Length: 159
Image (cartoon, rainbow, N blue to C red):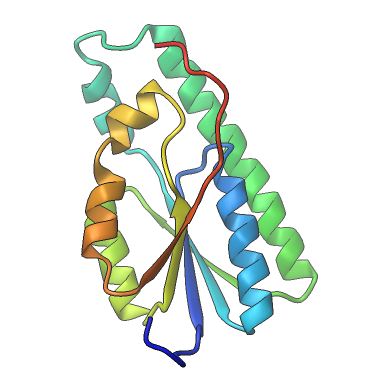
């Protein structure tokens, strides 16, 4: 961001996992502080890709099912957080995509003239790592705007 540049539009990237609530809270706080517009992009895992990822039995069926259940649960919790902010008079524009994450993010950043992107610094577990592995690095290298990486340490992951 250039010196003196105003933050007018903020995009929070959400993959609907528990730690992404942290990124949402940062987005709301910064948007209120800078009187900026806030957009939240929910990147959902395409069920076909999820099945293909698990095709060779990479993850036990229980882990796969638990991931899908937790993603659904997290979606509901994020919707509650966002709805509460909207009820409190703070507008949030929500976008949802199951397409290629990097291309979707870059399109939205350009089309919506985003000044700041907020996302988590890392992923939480095995499935997220397999789905999003090096994606954060690609996003960081490709963004034409500033980026805030939210650091949230998860508990231990059983590999």
